[in-house]
Length: 181
Image 1 (cartoon, rainbow, N blue to C red):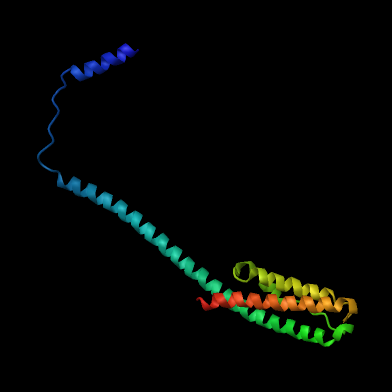
Image 2: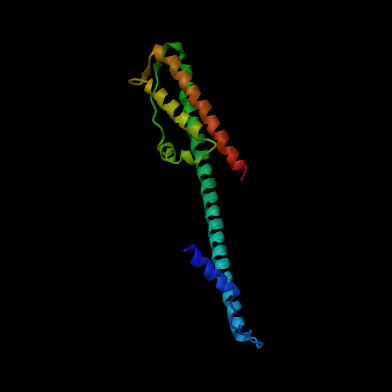
């Protein structure tokens, strides 16, 4: 087998080949124009597709940025109102003194519940926002039958202060994003 391959290569190298035809001296211009035009058409099609894709990406990025800005504006208003609700209940709880007493349990506002589904999209405020909600709900759990016991009073004030602090932190994160736009 090896001998056969060597013999074939030797024959190919040493044998005289028939003369090769010379290229025509006349250039076939229509064929060349068609060939170059075809290549340019393919390059143009690729460039146009890339440009359209890039424009779509830029438009989507602009829509996403607009939605994110709207989400932050909405969250800012909602958490400002929620912060006032927390402040009112904290002031009421602090006014009871250490003996406890009558205080109304509040619910998380519907607008905060609606926003809760989107909080993860607020990167600078999401953990503080979730902590605000959890602290506020924990405070409400300390109120039984419209009153807080002496034992739970200190915890109620502490948890409401935590909710207020976390709400302020969430608002700070939201406002920082709004200021950078």
